[in-house]
Image (cartoon, rainbow, N blue to C red; front, top):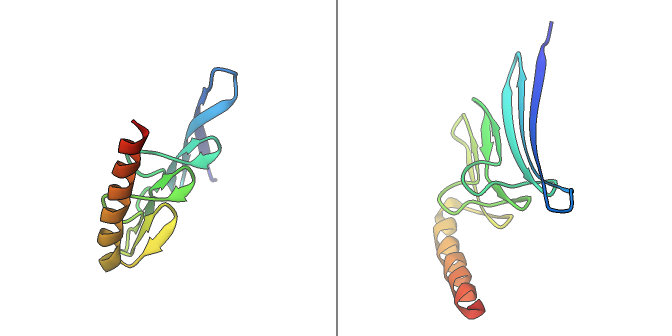
Length: 112
């Protein structure tokens, strides 16, 4: 007999709309944890989706994105690198990340 347990934690904004949700799903075969913001996968301090023993995916505002390594990691060792939803080969990722961070810092300076 299969047993599923689902926990959800909702946070609503000031006008009562769902802002974010942390969802944990336990079953006999697997456990997953997902973080959402406005209905999209989103987490700034770790993977937005984690299937224990299988895969982890880092997302910001629904886009695969990570600034310190691969955005997708499988337990078998396969990895994929993304910046704002765009996939890179590992050797190109670090150069693209440096350009992305420089652009982000430049935009911050221009908005002050």
